[in-house]
Amino acid sequence: MPREYLKKATRTASSDASDVNATVQEILDTIEKGGDAAALDYAAKFDKYDGPVLLSEEDIAAASAKVSQKLKDDIAFAHDNVRRFAEIQKSTMQDVEMEIVPGLIAGQKAIPCEAAGCYIPGGRYSHIASAIMTVTTAKVAGCGHIMACSPPRPGEGIAPAIIHTAHLCGADKILSMGGVQGVAAMTFGLFGLPQADILVGPGNQFVAEAKRILFGRVGIDMIAGPTDSLILADDSADPFIVATDLVSQAEHGYNSPVWLVTDDRALAEKVMDLVPGLIADLPEMNRNNAEAAWRDYAEVILCGDREEMAVCSDEYAPEHLTVQARDLTWWRDRLRCYGSLFLGEETTVSFGDKASGPNHVLPTSRSAKYTGGLSVHKYMKIVTWQQATRDGARPVAEATARISRLEGMEGHARAADARLHKYFPDVNFDLSAAE
View 1 (spheres, rainbow, N blue to C red):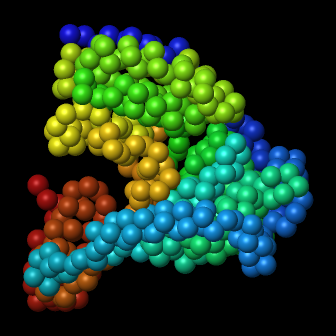
View 2: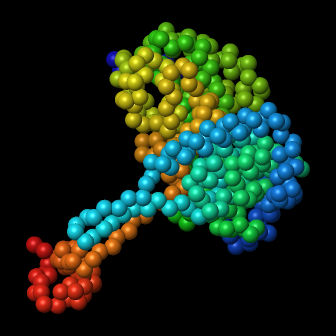
View 3: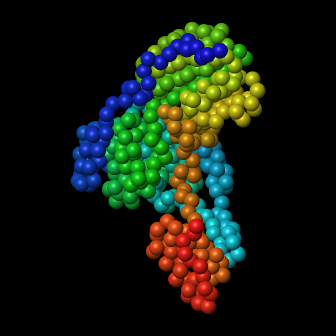
């Protein structure tokens, strides 16, 4: 049967996008030209904060003292899970070498970036989990210097729990500055910081645009849009759990899409009945976000069977993908496009967002079709090397000379010729263009 939309989105992230490019470009240009002073001007304007920019050890200790032991224990639990998962990921990257032809050895090395800049959101919510996800993975990757920046609250500074977490996870410096100015400070090496080689972490549309503009000059984890989530459910799913999970992700923001894809009409209708009441029961700020996201961006899609559901899911390529259906192994093997996969009722996206181990910085806006999320691999560059003996160089030089001449690149050919004539002066080589 063709797909049936029991609920269709009236807006999408692309249709809702505003042009922030010019604004962000102007801020970046001004800060690059004006340095520390310009960044402080923007911090006063946007952050409304005039306290210390770089936190001292005393500042960090004072913030940590404000965090309850119970919260510290929870942070330590989540940090340990993320760290151990990152370590097993890193173990999959190995330095290797092989003899390509006799006398020619080539290899690869995994080398971490030297300086990493981690952006930790702190606007509507204090994103403790983002500090864990970004700083911990940079530390495990082996980055030489890790900077973390987060928006300060007017008259208060960064939330103490974020400071405690960033320090626990391995940040060498913590910058009390948010938005484009925070990203710029890490990129341009302001306030005595090293210039970042890579920028990671979620943020609002201005932060995302700043990273997009700076990409190439620095590496970035990804260009992110609003967070999105999709649930695949059959008639074995619990409608209350499905509805609760949809609402939990809709609270991220007014433009955070949530989608339900199912082959059971009764389940879909029950979930649609439950969602408004679950949203109404949320605190006001969360409720406002979830109401708008459900009203304008959410979709409920009815498919004919599980294969059609899987095809639909792969087309949407969600950031978060939950399966609440029979035969989880089939789904795990079949699904191909997602940021992170959550299998079974016992697993929820909220676990991944906060504490379970795999990273929560994930591809959005269907970019899961071509990339995965943040991991130690993002902080590491795979480089190659090669070394030849004179005998090993001979067949490679001959092939290089002939291919180069066919391509019209005589300089390349002569670099190969020079070695052949030096190492084998008595050999008459045919180095004319390959045919």
